[in-house]
Image (cartoon, rainbow, N blue to C red; front, side, top):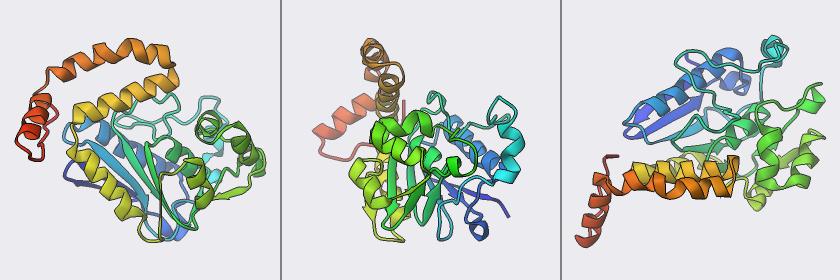
Length: 259
């Protein structure tokens, strides 16, 4: 049985962790299946957005450390293989398409770090989050030390990175770490609803918005300003812009082709 369910649903790629009997603990095999799914999202021109979710009662209990110890000791970090794209993507420049994240139960360590590399997050009420690494003798190495303070502020980030304490979905919603707080069992349907709206929007516009936002965060506002209109020029010459204008004049829903 696959450790990750991968399903193409129209322009949406569904990526589902599927090791519920182990609380979706991520071993190396699961990591590589997720990385392959991310590569599929990036490389398939028909795909516009992904939903990351998990089967069972929990998103993930975290990394299966006994399977990863040798990797962490290599001094190079986690390396995706051929036909794979790192779902942690610490540099933030590999994936140009959005990912919507849906969590429930417990979402620890690598689960939080994958969430931080997504764009819109949904969580069920009662979901618990944690970076437990300092309780296991290491520190977070999947991007939490880089991204978490940007999302929730320095003090909040260090409060949990340095103690390994848990925080709740309700706290995450107050901080803006998640954008939708739903009843248990509704997290996937809400994430899919959001993804469907993205899939109907103009792909060049969505990708351009995401790219500009990432440049502003990783390289600074000035770099984003310099790239804004040069990156917009080919979009303005696209068929989708004509479709957007025509559909507006005809008072109908636009049908975008990403061209």
